[in-house]
Structures are given as C-alpha cells and as structure tokens.
Length: 390
Image: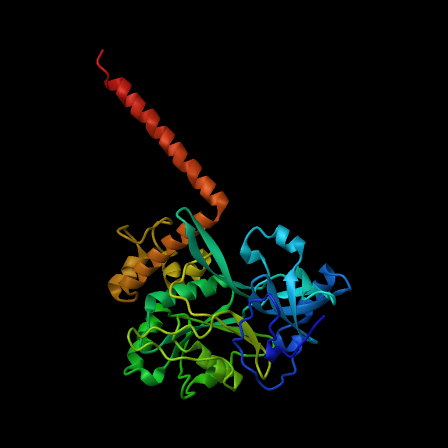
C-alpha cells in the first residue's frame, strides 16, 4: 500500500488529481485528531474483520478517493459490493465519510469494504429531467456548517435556503458575514439577517483583516468537523486559510465586471486543523436546490411553526382563516409578512422536491390523480346521460 504525507497530494496515473492544497509544513495526523471516537471504533469493530483498516475520506476524485489514516494517506476505490448495492450516487463514499478499507499492495489503490453510519449528511438537488431530481451529496459527518455571505452583498433568500439545507442535514447552522471591512452599514445588514434567521448564530468577520475570526475558531475542536458553504467570491478559502494559520488554499478576487467570484476551490476537500478537528472547504455554487428539507424548513422557521400551533384550525393555511395566530402576529408587527411568504414558498418547494425524489410518494400522488380523473369521467358521463334528450 503506497502512502504519502497528506499535504503533498501525489498524483497517480489515471486519476483526476486536483491539487487544491499546496505544500504545507509536516503535520502529524491521527484519526482521533479529526473526529474518530469510541462510538465509531465500536461500530467499526462490529461490522468489519481484522484485516480492515479505518480511514476518513479527504477528497473524492472520480472512481477513487484520498483517505486519511493513522499511517498517512492512501488511495482507495469502492468494492464491487458497495458499487452494486448503491442505488444512487449519494450512497457511495463521500468527503467526510469514515470507512474501513483493505490494503492491496500490488494495486495502485486499496479497496473500501465498509462505510460507517453517517451522523449527518449535507445534500442539495439538481434537476436531471423534467419529472425527476437528483440528490447530490456535498459532505458527510459535519458538526457545524458556516453559511458564508459577503456582508456588502447579502442575499437573504439564499441564506434561508442554505440554512434549511444545513438544518435538514443534522449539523449546526452558523451564519458568517464576511468582508465586513467592505460594508458601509453593517448594523443594518445584521438586522436584516437576524429577521430572516432569528434563531441562528451570526458572526461578522473579515477574512482579510482577521477581525472576528477568533469567534469561528471557538467552533473547532478535535471531535468536530466544520465546513464553509456559500457562493463563489464570498471568501470561503480566505477564511479557511485563517483557521489553518497559513495560506494553504488558493484565493482570488471577484471579477470587476459583475462582482461574481472565481472558482478558486473546485472540489470538496477535508483538511485537518492545526489544533485538532477538521475543516471542509466546498466549491461555490450559484443555486441551492432543497433536498430532504421539509424538517429543515420547520427548524429554520420555528417561530412560524410555534405560532401555527395556536391557530384555530389545525390545517390553517395562514391566509384568511379566522383565528390565525400567524396573521395576527403579522398584523401586530411581531412577524414580518415577507418571512411568511418565504416560509410558504420554501415549504412548497421542499414538498415538490420530495415528491420528485421519493418514488413511493410519486406513486401515491399518481394514484390520487388517477382516482380523481376517474371520478371526473364518471361525473361527466352521468351529466351527459342525464342531460340527453329523450
């Protein structure tokens, strides 16, 4: 089994190697320093044989992955059994996964035999055809996810979508307003963010000057994995370098013509932090498709969900029903009306995506529509017969 220092990322023939992380000082990496604990050790022992070795997926490069192990790093690919049993791509090893692999000294890569249970998984969706969507796994086993936006160009609707996705994943949501040094009225921006996400911690930072970054370091611990997500150009890689204490990740300025960011990060990459824990830097994405997000909607809009419990009717749509606690909160100024609009819109989208991705739900809805169509045909036929001249 060929191994190497983690920071060097050696390319191998036929691999789509993406050298995102430049050469750094030698780091002594152990699995316990990036989240391996007794619970995972017990699961590994119960589901694997003595010939397997534990490791964590640092990056996915096509058919192979880069694994961190107690002995360094190695290349590995999924076993034929894992490939055969995976019904969708998100069931294959992903960045952040804990796995058990078997050494193959005579091969270019080792083989992954076991993927341990994911404690959380962050996904998004993309449309693959008119009637179906595909779930794309971003990373697994995240504890904290930083939603990064540029303080001088905040998109509140996108922020709500990202918060819903993270809440649905099982990870803690933290909002980071970066580039505070470029914002003229940070207090006004902060007030707007707190209205859209009243239950989420918000931090104002500057990756360039370092102001406020210490607060983010408080979320990093040896048993935690954190991640930055956000659009290109919001400064995720700059913040990554701050947490790492050196310029490890490539950074780039936004384009002058449209202020969009360049894709300096092109793949998800797990990086051990100097004081323990791990960080995953993700590529910027232009749109955020909701995936398995119905529970996330209720979490992010918990204030509306709690108000809805006191509505007169259990099936209240919060529109014109009498005794609607949500509408009363809007009338009193307690709840902004546009927040209710976002809640309704995102709830409908989450339900739509779920119906497109869940085959059982699609079949159930199809049966309902077929039954309705059949009833309509019967009613039409009866009316025709009733109205036919004698």
